[in-house]
Amino acid sequence: MVFTLHRYIFRELMKIFILAVVALSMMTSLASILQPIQEFGAAPIQVLHLVWYFFPVTLTFILPMAALFACSMVYGRFASDNELDACRASGVSLLTLVYPGLVLAIIVAMANLLLSFYVMPAFVQKAETSLKADAQQIIFRNIKRKGYYTLPPDKKVHIYADYADEENSILTGVIITELGEGRIGRIITAKTAKINFIIHDRFNEVEITAYDTHQMGFQGEGGFSTERLALSSEFGSLVADDIMFKKIDEMKNIQANPMLFYPVEKLARQAFGQLITEMLAEDITDAANKDPNAFYRIRCGEDSVRFRATNCKARTNPQMRDEKKIELTGDVVVIDGTRKPARTLKCKRATLHFEGDELAPTLTMELYNARWIQGGISALTQRHVIRGLILPSTILNKFKDDNVLNNINLASTVLKNEPSGKLQGIQAILKSKIQKTFIAITAEIHSRLVFGIGCVTMILIGIGLGIIKKEGHMLAAFGISSVPAAILVICMISGKNVAKNPGSSTMTGLILIWSGLAFLTVVTIVIYRKLLKN
Image (cartoon, rainbow, N blue to C red; front, side, top):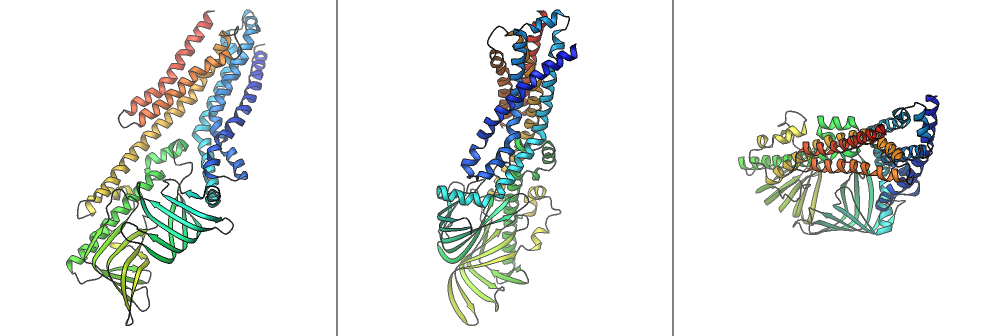
């Protein structure tokens, strides 16, 4: 008889539970993709993909609420129809009648833990992959709709265009602005520009080839015009670069190696890039001090470029973290061996800057208002660019291994002078980011555990209140039982924020996270103690 009774109650629970899940899923799934649609201008077919990819995210919260609703409704009706009293009069205890609801609560808790630790992060990463695969179309659709697009994640590159030809990946009437920590770094205008995407393992790179261009005032370098100008920028994560979207094994791997978390890796690359910039500047200066007339040699494939300068200094503006540039001033003489025959250029100012991957960079030399001499012919050039220069092996050989974080910590050892304020600033930001990442991982794991376990107590409270409020409105029990659920969520969110706050203890945040579950446990004990007494 008890088995038949359990099956009857469980069947009623599942009817309402499934209907509630379907209804809530339809509402929340559509709401969850509104921001991506508005921000990225997703195509209709991609909207359907996003609905599917974001479904596990919403399901994490839908399942406990649907189970809470089903249990409070079923047990409330069960009690109001006096079926509960009849069962207890037949010798069936209250706790025995609660078993079907408890089974549903445990199933929901296990599903919630599985979703939050494994399924939801995997689907968010699929959504990220889907958006990045359509990144070029996203850029063109936004330019068509708004006239401009800002490249994620740091929104430092703005692309404006009068017309966007999505089929041929060409923009017409183009203005590109680059921001450097709150101010405009440079402005580039072009008649046309072609957009191309370069796929990397951890991020994508946007390559913009501008034609008939003019660049205006970049950090005092003055303006210049050229027929063709290539520039690239990182197209970062649109969704997934957050600890809250990581699987449990990914979080553990990040704890073992912070470089696996892209925001940390990006800062480490900036720090390492600035470090080798200052190392190269010191190496050039040391060579000039030994023999002012000697030329410093940098390879470019099978050829080489030789140069000397009166002064050599790495740029160390702390507001320009992405800038990795060396200034050559005074009497600058460059022998460009990439030209056949070699061309000698003389100017008062030139720069060496790093391009591409900071861990394996190439160098580009730019000479401003240089006079060149080749085969007895002399002329003045507004801007001369030499690309594809290879970093001297003597620089990287100073490091014992390929561990980037360890190499960054060796800055004061490998540099003869004190590391610049810019490098020290990036190191401090990197150290803080790693600490915050570790704290975020700890808080995220605890909050997921608390919410998963809390599903059981939350649903048990709904069952108890459904029985207690049998004389009232059927939705009253659900409404009241939602209050402890809200307290659990508030404690989780508050605890995570407190744990991440530099001015507070991480342990305080974790205690606050678990206090929500403790509160629900106490409420559950009080409710069932009252029911058992009656």
